[in-house]
Structures are given as structure tokens and as C-alpha cells.
Image (cartoon, rainbow over all chains, first blue to last red; front, side, top):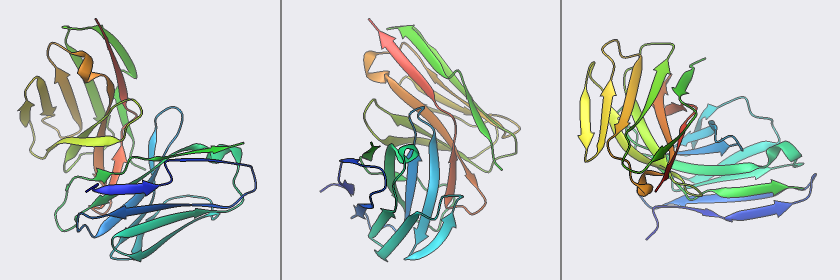
Length: 114
Length: 111
């Protein structure tokens, strides 16, 4: 009965490859996020979807393309992976409608680009 | 854009000592949240502060929102090894959906 789940947990791949990370939440939330956490632990928002609509798109290379097939799922596809993409990627979800509602994070996907 | 700094970046304490992390914003905030991330884990919500000067307690943790709503602090009394982790403040920016996380304070507790 995991609230926010991500697959895979670990991803090791070569530079130039294309990979996807998947996220699912069973909390009934309508807003989902992707965050990138680098080696210094800085947590930076990348994208957010509300009811399948993109609402936040930070300055992220267009090699990163999020997709939300429904409000319970948010996937992240990365093309032409680079060394600098190595990081932990966290998915999170939230119920909108009230400012300050907490975000629930998934366990993270550790991406290593060789 | 919104900048949220936390100090210190890192603190190492002996078990039983107190610990405080400070969060400072360049702008007035409507609310602030605190999260804890254990080593190898994911951020977990601790609390939200909304009112100027607000103080909230959770067992040994005390959270405070500054009078000017530009800063906040988290104080842990008599730390335990279970307190180890990185503590982040997070502020809402732009739309209520977006959180900007602080730089984090990593706490190490040894016996």
C-alpha cells in the first residue's frame, strides 16, 4: 500500500542512451512533481502536473520530457543522457486546493550515467 | 527568483546536545514547511507554519516562524541518533503548487 512509488529504484546507463522513470501515487492527489537532487543534496523542482496539465516547467533541458497519462501517474523520459544527469530523481504528489498542502515523496530513483 | 538559504550546511553533535537550523528568505513568505530526509531516504513532511511569530512543537522539535515572516528555525532538544538526516525548509512561490526548497542542513549525531 505504498503511497508514492517509483520505478526503477536504481538506473545505471551509458552516456547517450534514452531512459524513462515512472511514478505512481495512490493517494488520490491531483498534482505531481519531479525533483532532481544532486550530490550536494540540493533539491530542485523540474516539472509539475495538475490533473494531467503541465503547470510548472523549470529551466530544464528539453532532453527531459515529462508525461502524465492520468492524474495518478507521472513519467519522466530523458533523451541523450549526459554525465551531469546523474542524480537522484524524486517524484512527489500533493492535493491542491489549499496553499501549503504537504508534498508526499516517492523513494527516489538513483540515476548513474557512465 | 526565490532564494532560500539554510545555515549551517552541516552540524555534528554529540547525542544529548541541542541543535538548531535556520532558514532565511529574501522575500516575505506566506507559509513555510519543514521536511526531514534520512540518509538514503526521501524527504518527509514535518510541519507547516503560517502565522507570524508562530511556534509549534513536536516532542523534542520546536519550529518557529519569524515575526517578519522571512525566516524560520527548527530546534531539536537533546538530540538522538534517530535525528540524523538532512533538514530542509521549503517555501511556496508563485502558484501555491510550487515549493522552493532550502539548501538543507545535514545533522550528524554521534554517541
